Image 1 (cartoon, rainbow, N blue to C red):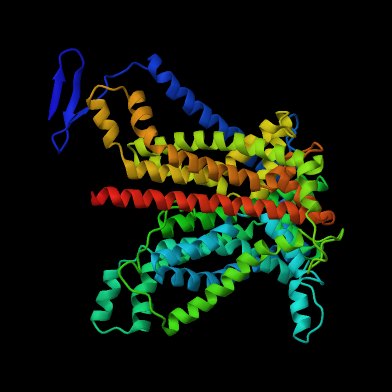
Image 2 (image 1 turned 60 degrees about the vertical axis):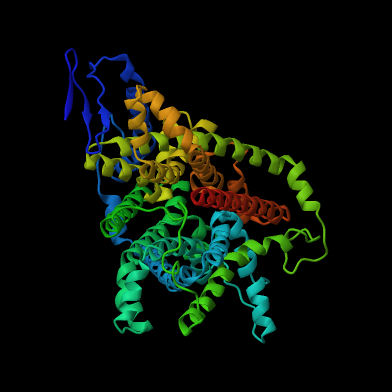
Length: 592
């Protein structure tokens, strides 16, 4: 039913519930009220064009240029760089080593992560929350902190070697070997695998499992013929995502692999250092194409990209089923202990390493001192990187949250399903693009724009890789809220702007704070882009730690690592307590 206005024509319609839904009057193309919306659209489009599409296009052009640099006065195109990839035996070895590392690490991660996710999904709510907390802590701790710890664990005098000698073996080292790189990659991928699989398993309807057992299926038959098919999509999506991440991973092979265990990403970085832009860009394009194919497969299989760890998890499988110790839960519980050891040992070992009195980092530590903590807090060697990282991460958090809010709003208000898919795909594209490819592309673009080495240049680059997780959180919140409250506000005479800010945004403040926190942490921990884009003497904190990992570890490194770990633990615990109190308050309100 439509209500007509003599001057404006249709202005209001009645929906199926009988509530009038206002329709704004038609505006001319030059209506001043549309200018803010147009400005936001142009700003978001310009950002993606300059810091995403232009860098990728620049890399493609370099890959087909004679010297790796396109001369527009006399453009010359060639496929020699791609032919080199096909013909160079050493590059074949690098490519094969990369694929083998990605396959092996993904397989091991799946074999560890599936039992862990299954065990957590069977636990009671509180116990599952504790185990998930133990998974999230190393997931949020800086990767360079965990890599520092792994260098101490895998070294000839490290924890593993000493444990082997205690059992009667000889001293050994996994540092700078393929095995060490594999351990580090599995450590990095395991939280992704666990969180994605757990999310899928908690969505399994308990009634389906109960029906299978009622019809006479035993535990093994129920698991194989009912449970596995229901979580097959999550398994395939998590496996492909982990393979994508491992295929283009840079930081772990660069630190743990050594010169004899190069992967494609490390080789690209070394070629850039030698100013061999052509072959580096060609390899980057090949890596991007492989990543895009796998990403499309993830979308086709899972129906979309789901960022792990976004949103609260709810109990599904065990919500109505009491936990009991069976051979299956005993086995998966044992695997869970192994997985937690893999994840937590690199986090915990930094604390004893940070209090040793010696000038070199050894395990077990000799003596006890807090001197290194004092140096971290009083010397410019660490204070300047800390201040720089705080500034960059704060600005990145603000920009990322604003961009994520705008794109989420576009997705939720768009009438075309194709528009929603395109915007969502664009939002997640930077997170699956190889970081090394973005680094060399953005570096070349920012050199032309005089942004290389500046804080704004680094903030723009970090915003590109930080806002997707913020977008996932905000978009999920907006989708759950819907537009009903805003519609009601329009009905009462409020403008669209007033309804959005006073109705929708007022209730989303906790979500926006959470999105800011995700973007802040992502920027704070980012290494690859910062490594390429920072040209001055003062680097961000992760890059400073990374440089010490390459040149030689000093005792202040474990001290700063321990402080960062404590900060992450404190933030996660505060978030959990806040969420628990909100849930309890909501439960009490429902009872009343």
